[in-house]
Amino acid sequence: MEVTAQQVSEWMVQEIRFRGSLYQADAIEYVKTNFGEQFVFVNENGNASLSKEVKKAFRKLHGGRIAWDRDGFFWAWT
Image (cartoon, rainbow, N blue to C red; front, top):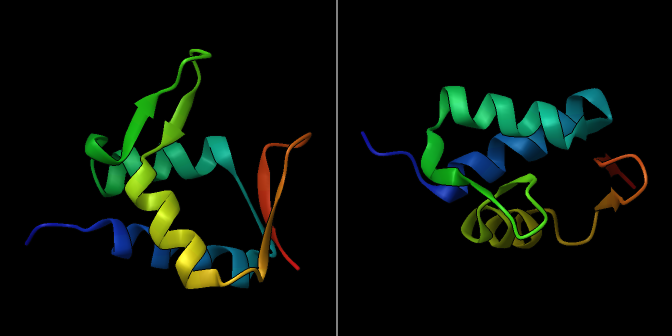
């Protein structure tokens, strides 16, 4: 069965709901290992990032209830 960006974003929301936050490095490692490398890329700054499809599905799914902490590189429930 093929994994979708929607499934990845659902996992992210569940993690944040349960733990209160999710660090980008942890998310990238988990997504690569459990969902596949196709959901991760290296951005123009040379950092690993989640794919645009995952980010789009994630934003749509949480509807503003999760915020990105730019300084700490994590998402947290608001």
